[in-house]
Amino acid sequence: MWKIFCEAYAYTGWPFANTDFDTLNHFITEIEAENRIVYFLNSKRNLAFLIAIVIERVRQRHTVHIEEEQYEWTESLFHRPLIELAKKLEHTYQISLPKDEIFLYEFRGL
Image (cartoon, rainbow, N blue to C red):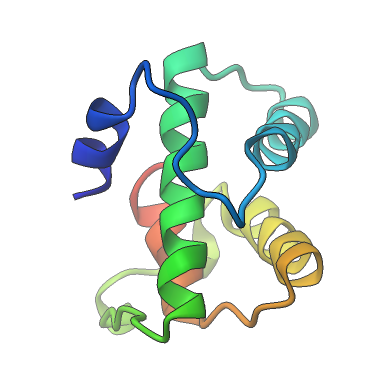
């Protein structure tokens, strides 16, 4: 679903009035630098869309539930960076991200 959003708004601007694109892009750039990885520009924009969609869902209390027993998410290379990102998002946007939402970022390849 989030990919449809990315494609629909590919050239029309940022559709999330309450979530700043530059802030999300900065957080993604920090993850790149800390982990010595590089995302393509379109991938960074897609990740920013995913993060913004999750923030909006959390604000509206429409969160996901994921059966974490089927996946060792704490063993992933991106576990630590995602926990740090979640803390930044919670602080910046005054939200509380459930663990399932953090897992969703990892599952989608952040």
